[in-house]
Length: 390
Image 1: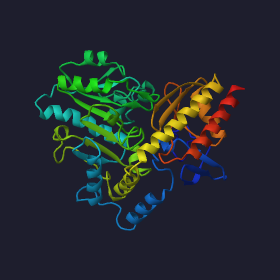
Image 2: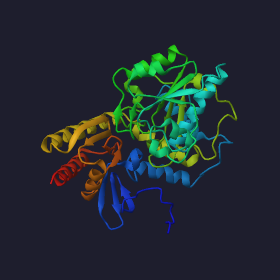
Image 3: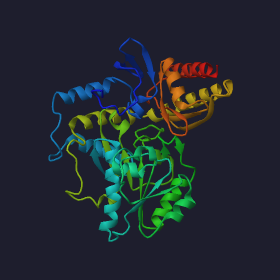
Image 4: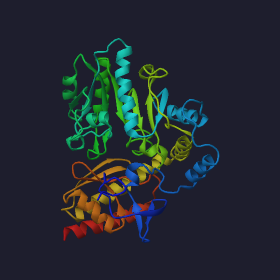
C-alpha cells in the first residue's frame, strides 16, 4: 500500500521536532549536529533569533499579495543583491529550478530579440545538476533522473566541465548561451579549474553568447564570497540563486545585467508566489547577517579548520578519505567506502551530512558555526572512519 506522502524520497528513519543553531533535536531526544543544512539551505542554522523576529513580524502584517502590486521588501532585497554583485536587476521566484528555468528562457529570448532566433542552443556541462523540471533535467547530466520522463526538450549540447578547448569546439552558429555551476555541488563538489571561468567569458564574448551561472548552491556566502563567481576575474550575464537565500524559507532569484534582462518585458515571465512578503522578509534577514563586516572572513576561517582537520583524519585513517574538495563551507570528502555508508555511519555519531556524485560526502554546515562545532564534527568523522575501518 502506498504511503500518504508520495514515496519519492529514500528518507532516513529520523524525524526532528526542533532546531537551535547548528543542532537538530529528534523526537526521541537525540541531538544531531547539522552539517547538511537542509542541503545548503539553512545559512544561519535553525531558529536564528534575527530570522525568527523578522519573519514573525512579517507574519503578523502581511503574507502575500501577488506580483500584481508593488512590494517594498522585494525592492529592498533586489537593491541589496544588485549592490553586492554584477547584476542590474533581479527576478524573484520560489526555487532554484524555477530560477534556472527563467534563466534558460532569458538566454533564448535574448538571442531572439537580438535578431538571432537561430541561436537557441545552450552549452551545458558533464556532471551538472540544475533541477528536476523537464528543462533543468535536460540541462543536467544524470540519465537516472531523466529515465522514463522522455521525450526531453531539445536545445542543449553537453561538454566536459573544465575543458575550455572542448567548449570552444562545441560552439556552432546555433549556440546562444552557456550554463555552468562554478562549483558542481550534486556532481561531487568539483571546482572549476583556474582560468576556466575567464576563458568561458572570453569565448562567449567572441561568439555573441550569454553566460549564466547556476549559483543555487554556491551563493549567499557559501564559498566565502556572496557569489562564487566573485573568486574569478570575470562576470556572468545571469545568475540563479535560491537555497541559502531564504535561510530555510523558499525563495529563488534570477540576477541579470541590463543587456540580458532587456529580453524580458511585461508578460514574458511571471510567478504567483515568487518573492512574496514572507519570502523577502526572510531573505532580507539573511542578508542582514551575511553582509555584516567579517562574516565572510569567518566562513573562510571555519573552512580552514575543517580542511585541516580532515587532512589529519585522512593521514590517520588511510583507507577512508581519498580527497578533500571545495571552497568555503561548500566542502566534500571523496571517501573510499561508499559515501552512503559514510553518511549513515556519521549519523550514528550524531552528525548529519549529504551525499553527492563521485562518491563524495558533502560537508555544508551553517555559515555561522564556531570552532566548537567544527571540533565536534571532526570527532564524529574520526570515529566513523575508525568504525568503518574495522
